[in-house]
Length: 463
Image 1: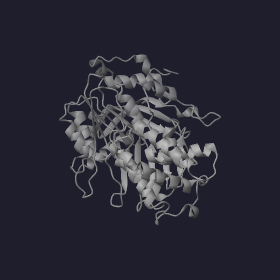
Image 2: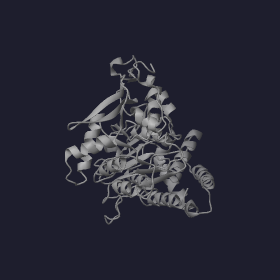
Image 3: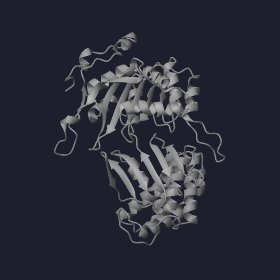
Image 4: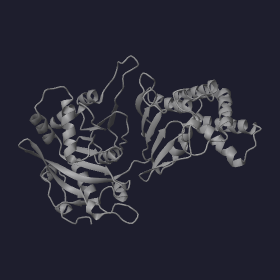
């Protein structure tokens, strides 16, 4: 744990001592709102032990010579002594649980720690201090975990965002951040959040997924995976499109893994989430404005700056504003093989969104000029969706063919078979199938010494 982490932990304890059980006046108490699960009967005891422990170990939390494992050992030893010193009767299992929960609060993120350690969870959603939901196998379920009060939740949020140099307060009540493993974090606090602070954590796997993993999950088929690998190695510009939580970033990370290790990669993100295994990677992260409203560095600023960094590939985590214009310019000025994501419901909608975001740049460009830029810059659109059964699937791999009049022409190379219906358990039976059309970019791939088996596109391939 770094010095800043320990400072946050110490501040956490001091705040808990100063205000042990005072809920925020703007948020209803647990008794006044529906509570998910049962209230912890040892909540008051944990609060007292937590405060006493931080008071005892406070100076050691600042000791730069103490390793993380040494600190954890001392915290657990002091915890066991503090809990044993209480005259409250409790079973051995309750004693161990209380010790672990207080340790999580001091060394980690309190009631979120067991959820963060669970590899089967993909999302953690906190709706105020007393409601926590998780996504398991694509479905949201409530869990028997909660924060002591709104102040406890706010301290945890401050600890998370503070570790990556972000802040959240009444003047800036929304924040995007990340955990140490790259998991995405979003927090919204009062006055914007009316019923208590909201925290959303999208967890990433400890080991980044590979194309083989996505094939095993049914996200795509083996022939489609081979085509996408060829597209990346052949330096085609690829745009991953999909809705919220569809798995765009995971797919982008898998695609990035196909980039040859001898190329220089520059990644640009709002909150750094991509985890590339290549050695020559320059990671850039945008920065919000400071408390005076100055110093903001946007994704658009980073895209423009990246072109001066001699990149072989530019990977933008997500295009959501006028940065679309700079990204198209980069793709059209020799930076082939660029990758990015965009929120859209279909490949056609993705192009429309890019067109709209280019207009946000403030230049009075004709619509036809924008479409010509987009059609020449983007080669392949990968559409990803989260289906009714909670599974995440690639539903289309679409080639951007060119312009016919004022319309961008598209053709699906692979398309998801929705006509297969559902099985008895409600799971989607369909899969990604080739349409039988041979993409026009095959010749461009051959120019980069990347060859694709024509049988890959035959009807029935991979079935």
